[in-house]
Length: 121
Image (tube, rainbow, N blue to C red; front, side):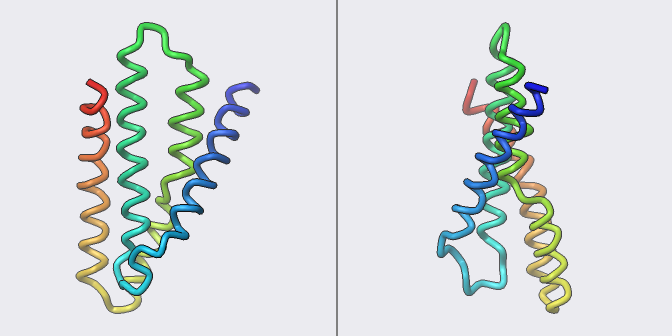
């Protein structure tokens, strides 16, 4: 039960942060969803850093790791928004932007995980 509470509280914090970042006036008139991409890259970096820190410690607090990874990062990142926006781009005839967005999200997201881990080392 405490694990569920840790994930839920982290999810609340991550979701609120995601909402606030979504209010930033960055790229509002662009066809490319730059805010969602930035949110996913930041979340990827943070989850990489948290994982590396947890592996570095001899006895990491498992609830803190759950709070940060499944809770905060899970609530903050936006795969469902990514999927919706990619579909919207395709439906709107912006095939090149959709492919760029999907490719950038995948490649840069994985690189951000490695960067987050490397930043800890």
